Length: 217
Image 1: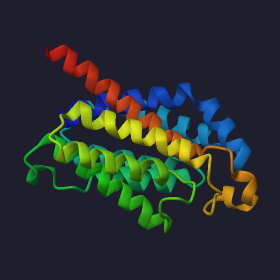
Image 2: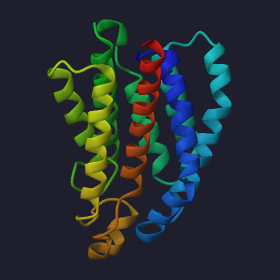
Image 3: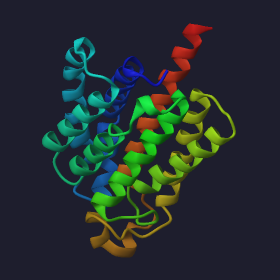
């Protein structure tokens, strides 16, 4: 299932979900940031929706699609979201997909690689009230589900649930990275918009996987 066709469908779902939540993400960011996270992500989402037909007709493989999305993110999104989310897609597209035997292993490897890319470029770690507080728990949950022999859809479900818990966790901690760090203890009690976007992404990918599995049954 983790191939180009699935990823294009997921990118469409992710983009539409982000656009739908644009004002909500802005509201979250307005409290602890510049208030434009939703606007920036929605602009990127609309660009990707425009790119999808050409990507579908092209001969680019999955890794190339992810790298295309990453570069578009970096060049088109303002603020810190562009480099961070762009790096996630770019790095996820770097895995040697053909060298892994299982679609599930490819999925987990891509998320792990993308997460480490974000951590490296942002010089950040878990517990600093960033998107990593959703990504790292998601990756751990997906790795555990893979080790337990769970299927593609169940792995995504585990990741989405862990990301949601990570979003809740960001409410309890003080920001030490990004714009939110400037308001210090006042950032406690508010969830991180970047982590929320990660959760939306995983939820969208999970829903697409569920729908595609239902079509095959």
